[in-house]
Length: 117
Length: 111
Image 1: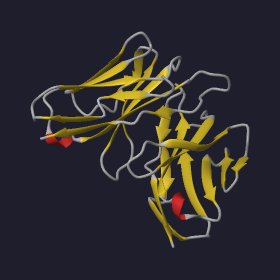
Image 2 (image 1 turned 135 degrees about the horizontal axis):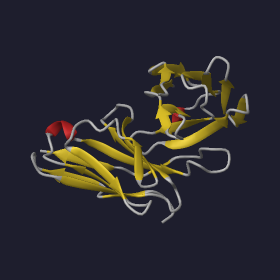
Image 3 (image 1 turned 180 degrees about the vertical axis):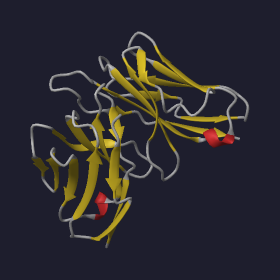
């Protein structure tokens, strides 16, 4: 595809259930980021992938959160035993982090709006 | 690690006036500084960026300046219009190419 794609766009889940969010980055982009954004708030960093490895996962709020990336492409963010405070928009972004001159533009997906009821 | 601070958190200006948003960073090795605009309900999108070998860059009504010695960079918007109302985020790269973000500035353009 032409841009970063996230699925689902909306997810309503019951408290205590597990959810899986998917991000398809732009082809060839080595860097992939997951962020969480609550209404009217900033970008809360969750995890950064460079290829399939995660040099920085310091933003994951608890051990209920995990993420993986396979084949240097698709990434999934899994939230186990969801809580109401997990409700937010989860944004994924990708960039060509080691292009000529270093970093290049990061492109964001449209986000997944997660609502835990 | 890299830390990016952004000020102010909210900025209200009269339509037609200029707006300036400032960011400071901590990692002297940072070499890429983008600015993103996020309109309500939409994803952040790049509006302008600057690299460390350049001191200033302009694109119509927006400009970014970089002071490497002081480790700060600023976004300047002239002749502000209602459609400039949004949240603006700055970012800087860290040593592992990771983008580190500022907390955002909500820009309000008063008619």
